[in-house]
Image (cartoon, rainbow, N blue to C red):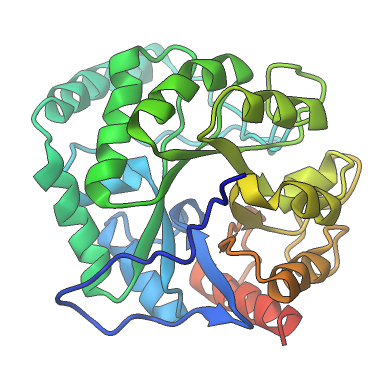
Length: 320
């Protein structure tokens, strides 16, 4: 079986800053840019600056951040509803007013028109921003919803190829995973399906059966294993990695409680076997990037960059 060796093939750089080294004990540590949605600055460039300040040398880039860095028109931001995340770890959807719905529709039409003007050079320019800062782009997170047309799926693959990443990660359904598989095969580009803990829904990536199903759909279908959500769903991340490491594109590192419990702000106090997972990567030399994903509420008096530094320090201690 072919191994998904993302960490072993960094992007070549002809120019730019010295590569930030965030490999500890042979394990590549990065982050998904989603973690930095809560940076005070609305400028997407601030995310790149955050990686430099924290000392993270590898990025999993959200497609909306990629588009923002390429100059896409901004989408309106509406407040999240009270009550926290839905079961399964996904955030609740805000109830929009008619005026907000109209604003969003107009913005979506403007964004669609902008997307029609993009080409490979658009995304190469984004990749250069990271390269110039000493950061490798390893993955593009492009969430592919059931409502997407084939052209929308193709758009994400073209973005990924021009960025020079080694794979796409996505949160989606098994229905979509079956549609995506032949497109991934055509492009010979890895897709890591991100799991949550919505074990009540057979169309979600959450149960062991769902992971097995999506991997069987195609050669390039793999797993973006979120060890926090996997633990919350009642499964053993260490055992899964041992069995399926050749099909894992990357990990999302977070700490959650079992039985669909919450994210915890102090890593190491939840039920996720973070140290055991990281030591497994180190000992077995699995070339699987481990990306920080911060989803817990930022404590009063702190900020997301300070929290990321704290989480990185914990991960480093696990690999000592």
